[in-house]
Image (tube, rainbow, N blue to C red):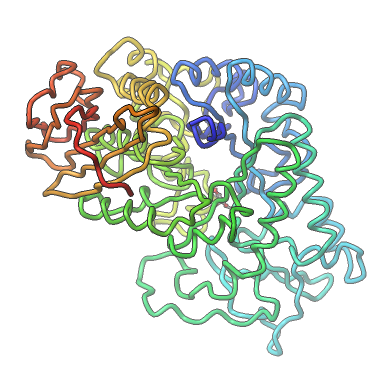
Length: 540
Ligand code: GLC
């Protein structure tokens, strides 16, 4: 255990800053608000806070369009307020991670303004400019992830520039050494300010094909899907040269001691694991999003866990993500009862868990009326389920109309604050919040749940079981923890291993009630059991 670093032992909590806490009453969350609410994170028992972008931005993509990488948008506060946030978080033992958005800047960033000014600009090649095709159209068939061509024509200079997302988000040219040097300076700026690491936005997209070849058609494309699914992303994602960039980011972080490099990477797991590097010199945590998209069955989850563990290189530390600002919330994906089971899964698997704000109280996706839609992904491709506003709504602190989030008009409508809020769950032992707190406390207190091997991953009917085990010291017996999760709507019987019940998702189950041979799980119940039957378990 002592050999694990803080980000291996710890749990990460993502805050979407526009929606966490609004201190100045303008309807949008801010840094002072986050600082005020850090006690909630401490009470919950998480170890690190990742804040989605807070840099100056025209907010075309709500901060993922950065106009200055080394400052704070006045909407969120000031550098002094950021420093105060870091100081308070560190005083509480909570690390602070920033969102680093290197793939594209805002079109208002001075670099792009300069680049677009003329073909001779020294910054011209900091972005991806190409001549029109012979017919005057876009240089190739590449598509934007927000719909339509990924090329925007600039009449003044007669060329197109590439944007993987909005036209307001031109892609930087990561083959240019000056871009790399400038971005390295950005990382150092924040590291010197005390930031403990970064979540790197769309890390797998940084490098595009040097020859700008057309992407091939996607034979599996289906109607009603986002536009860019028409093509395979063969030449616009996961290019081999990206690994060198990942390595250099990691080297910069390593120069500052124990910091963490996390990559946002949506790739099949076979390709995802390459982002750890060939001998651990890549990202510390290439985000593993499999639980977000998984078909929720015991058989499938057993397969996912086993396959991921088997593919991890020996130097790699696993991680699991249950929700984020780009995907429907877990309580809406799975329902309230299974969201509790999912919490137990996330916090008892091997590897660093990442939680999304509000999931700890079971917040649901909020239906956003058409006239209040904010997300450009929805505005550009309406009605195909691309909108991300529903999972970005204000944190529900109390039962008031705005949930204690703001005294002004919230930028997105709050959810069912009367039903679901922190205040009412705080002293309710049956609440989702209580379950999360107990799971986090159990994890912290149980070395086998943090550093132990995972093995015996099995699906039996609707029940998923696995074991976490840690060898004993000085002739002591190994510690073996059994997790049994009932994903179904019927009761099920599982072996109890003469064990001690450490935790159930059902708060009414009496403690220490697992000392028989078997245990009857209720529908949608998960349990964590400390085995005392002494049989040695298989590893991994
Ligand atoms: C990432 C972010 C997403 C954003 C996109 C473009 O996927 O998580 O919110 O829209 O990058 O920056």
